[in-house]
Length: 523
Image (cartoon, rainbow, N blue to C red):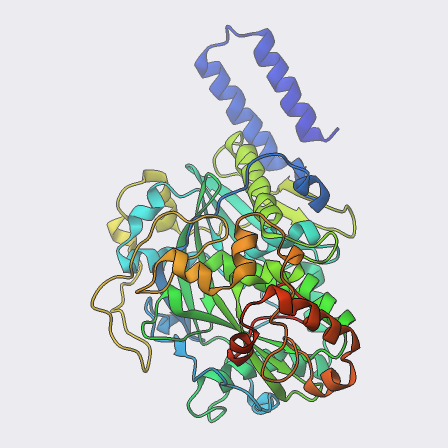
């Protein structure tokens, strides 16, 4: 038994055996206990198990995820003094084929990377600053969790994560968990020992963003510190969450959440085994990142081994779980949401029984203990919450006047029209729905995603009736090299023929641009 657990049990027994102690005596005991805790080293508060098998066997109702609503903006720059709380750094996607054919090696020699030795790469300061600048500080009155999107993505994918460790730092202020981002030592070691080839491949992702969004690509050095972040409010189960995450660009009329697009790169696939791995691993991470923020579309640049984009394709975030549903023991959104809720609920329960100011390290190390998230009290964790934000959370009232974050005039991104009214606010969404674009209702939007999305959202199995629409304008599935498709059609052709009876209008489907399908995948 850990020292803290034994101490807590003894204190609890003492309180039970002597209920006549005065409140003053109990307060003194609590202060003494807090003092002893501060002198002690890290100690385990508790843990929770989040393996996919256990989550999938749960008979509880599905965890609901409320539609994300935008409530703040941050345009970050390398010089923090120039960071503004507006959309001035949000870029527009140049078109449906933007980035196609691009050489992603361009600009590598002048690339401006961030300091990869920074153990705290994403302070929470900007989240609170953006909320104040937007005039929406009321959202802090009933928020349960404040964090960055990266932390939520890790929680959503943990049940299927068998190799990558992660860590977070948490403190409960009043009734709100502030969850800080922290790099693991293992992750930092991997980054710092990368060779030039690995550095170049990491750069290709930033280069694709430049090629897809810039009117004059690579004329200026690519700088990963120049970005746009969006603050959203959502609800996971009973927990209200305030989250901030980077957004790559927007596509459409207004620069609002409904039109945001995530940009990704991936190696073009040449066989079924590569497709399966892509669906099981990479799509899980992409789905978690985009779904958490309410980003509906992901544009992928599929590149060859030399870094040239051979194909671009737009994916629908809501469709991604359907692609992998045919695989045994595949990831799914239902268990992903339950996993995140289990961890956050356990964390809040443990922190609520601790004295104020206690900070906890949330740790996941699958190579040591699989499927177990540990909660460790650690007094060495530095204070990561801005003083004004802490006061705001404690009071639940107005921001302290002597510590207001700098308010900035809201600017519209280049090439976009100024909005005369705020984005439409819609009703609470289910775990698999995101607000439809302006001018269409939710049902019309869901229908536009195709029959597989409808079946998936109804809790049915898309693979039983849907195998169609797997080929697109390049005679291949998503990310499939067209030349490999011509050499490797045996299994795929049989699937395509079997699909014909399940799709009424194959001709119309074949004419659609960027059909969001995989070879043999449910649509």
